Amino acid sequence: MGQVNIWVLLLLVPVQFISYYAIGEVMFSYLRSKGDLKGMSRFKMARISLELNFVNHIVPVPAAAGFSYLGWMLKKYDVGVGRATMAQLIRYVLSFLSFVSLLIIAVVAVAFDYNISKSIIILVSLAILFVVILFSLLIFAISSKRRVLSLSKFIIKIVNRFVRIFYRRKKKKFLEVDKTNGFFVEMHQDYVEILKEKRILLVPFAWAILNMLLDAVLILIAFWALGFWINPAALFIAFCLSSIVTLVFSVTPGGAGVYETVMIAFLISTGVPAEVAVAGTLLARAALLIGTIGFGYLFYQLTINKYGKIPKSTNI
Image (cartoon, rainbow, N blue to C red; front, side, top):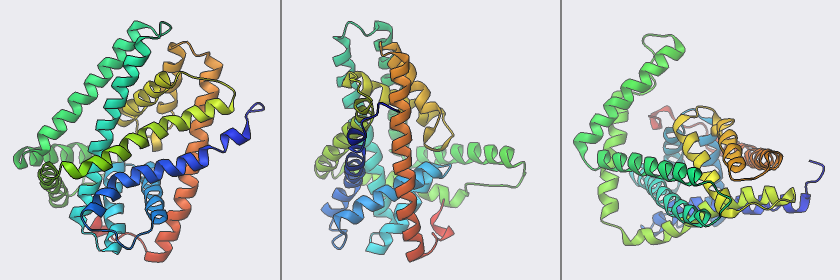
């Protein structure tokens, strides 16, 4: 920590703010194209995006929490729950497409770096294939009302069984059948509508690309602050692998612990000295989580103080 350049590290603040603004614009640019959010300032959009990220980091079931919170917030601006749900669905779909597109480019780039092991490239390629298959199965499921209800039934069964074991209460339920089925049916309807509006997704997709790049730049800045230069393509792959493993296997808030372990291990495997990989990764994650949780909690609490708590009826 004694060799951290504080002025370089402070670049995290504006870049992180722009990153939140960009991920918010994936949703909000779509909503504006539909004639919504006319009375919402750009700063408010970035603030809502930061609050949403805070909720997804803190609440045990991020996707459900995010859908509920954004639907509740946008209702204040006369945006229906269905439209808010579609905006978030678009965010996840376009984020995934930008994620895979940039990851493939990064893999091609590191393939020409002779310091990168071929086994690492094969491993990353398999990870890409796994994510594509997983996403394709999800799209296949929500493209049919019958299949999406089957998926809903499966998720309700698994989640409620897990909750009953965790709380040791036989009647304890986390997901209610009617609300959860309604949520997934709405996702199916949103998907059908999205297919009819492909052209208006170009601008949101551009914002999704920018957000992915900025997320990787945030980690790169932390290494710069320590005086180290990391191959941007390799760093982006490490970021993507960490995100994939965190999404699939981690149950800790923000993937704490799992995310850092995967990133450090991958960077070391590409030839980055262990002490550099550990120092840069921990510095980046600590600074970013403090920013996300600190400012996110502040804005979230201001919103709760202004509007009151989220009604239980908005939750799955």
